[in-house]
Image (tube, rainbow, N blue to C red; front, side, top):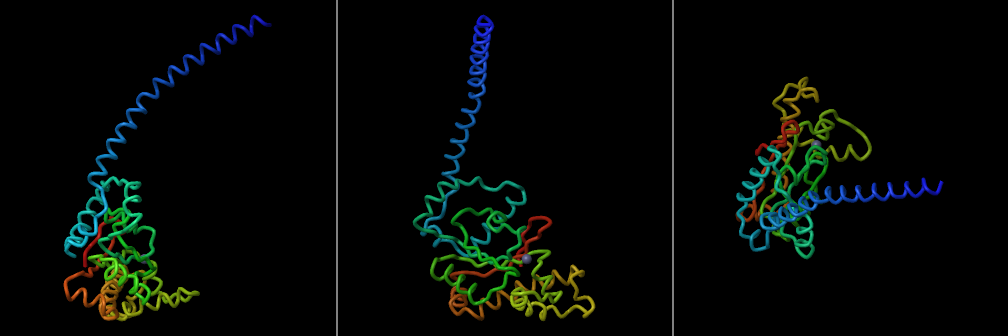
Length: 254
Ligand SMILES: [Zn+2]
C-alpha cells in the first residue's frame, strides 16, 4: 500500500512539473500580447487626446461638423478610433472642453458618441424621445455653448422614430401624451400629404415628419433662446440638422 502511494506521489510530482512547464510556455505569448497592448496604448496617447481649451476655442463651427462627417465614415467602416479611456478620464477630471452639443432621441439604435467617433469629454449630449427642445433643453444648450464654449449644436432625428410614430398615431398614455405634444408642430408642418396618407404605415410621411421635427426644433432654438440666436448671428456657433439611418448607420446632413 505504502509502495503504491510512493509511486503515485512520484507520478503526481512529474505531472505537476510538466504542467508547470507547459504553463510557462503558454505564458510567453501572453507576455508578448501585453507588450504589444502597451505599445498600442502609447500610440493612442499620442493620437487620441482631449482638446485643450485653446484648441477647442480655435475651432470654427464648420470644422466641428466636418470632423463629425469623417467620424461617421469611420463608424460605418467599423474603424472607430481606439480610445485611451483611462487617459481621458484623467485628462478630463479637472476640466472639460467639449466641441459640440448633440440633441438626439433616446433610441437605443442611436449611440451618439459612437456614430460620430467621439470619446469621453468630446460632446455634450441631450437626449429625449423625439429630440425636441423644451425650456430645460434650451437651458442645457445655452450652458453647453455660452458657458462651456461648444462650437456647434446638432439636432439629430432618426429613421423609424417611435416617438414620431406615436405622435402620428395620437397615442395617449400617462406622461407620454404631454411629451408627444412637442411633436405637434412637426405634424402641422407636414401638410403636403392627403389626410388618408398621414399614417404610421406610410414611411414617406413618417420620414417627412421626422425631418420637419428637426427643422422645427432648430427654428425653436433660435426663436426661444436669445443667447443662442446671438451666438449664431455672430458666427460663434452653428446649428445643424441631421438624420440618422438606423439601417445603414449613416448620418445625412439636413
Ligand atoms: Zn426616436
